[in-house]
Image: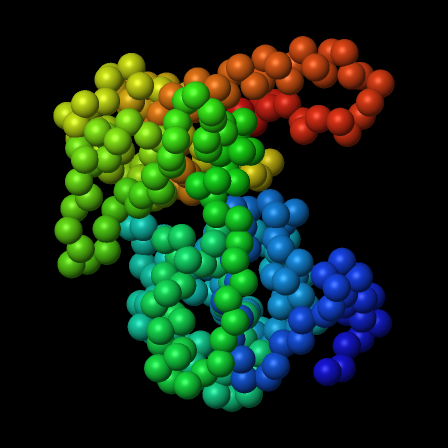
Amino acid sequence: MHLDSGQMSRAQALGALRGHYPEFPAGEVWLVGAGPGDPGLLTLDGLAGLVQADVLVHDALVDARVLAMARSGAQLQFAGKRAGKPSIAQTDISAQLVDFARRGLRVLRLKGGDPFVFGRGGEEILALAAAGVPFRIIPGVTAGLGGLASAWIPATMRGVNQAIILATGHGSDGEGNMDWTALARTNQTIVLYMGLGNLEAIAASLMRGGLAASTPAAVIASATLAQQRVLVSTIDCIASDARAANFGAPAIVVVGDVVQVRQQLLDAASRFAKHSASAPGALAPLPSENFL
């Protein structure tokens, strides 16, 4: 494989960190999770794929700074799917991946978050396997976990919850409705992907299942990015509060008592920062005007 001097330096750095440099064979598809947004959350193997790929088939939520890491001359092919907007059919995306690979190209299928968490990665792998196209899966940081951490909300907290439930706020055509009342009865943290559009109905179902109206809830928009916004409310008001604050996609919703821990962590961090001014970098930056 030929690399120019800029790519070679990146390859050498990745090799030193990784232990070896993962080679991207021609005619292969790498299914890569780009993380929730911030390029710093891209994995080393994901970066190795970016600097070698001939074509990037990417989703709408992949940050432009991540796409900018692609090697010079690589083709960028948009294949985003956004709720309520015209988008490419999944079968067509899978057919594109097969076609590119059969032409002998190194194909990077780049998805926001993790490709196997509400990312249709399983469908694409099955299509590649059926077509006899070799592939590799590179996990990514999913927004349901990375987004919570960036908003200072722990996914799990000893003494607060024993499990976390990841759920989609809307089902694909032909799928049955989620039994929200059953999820409510678990009394565990629930994280909703793509849930803003149906949040009022979901919240009502969760309350019918036994969740108290005062159950803490939060919406995290543009998680991990500079424009990240966090809205903290309760399950009975979260939908109306999100509308009033003009929250929109991409956003995740978290419901459960762990939301209350956020303020405790922020208070502790603020006290720590006041006593650690002489130690820059010892603490992640506190939320600023980008947070509610």
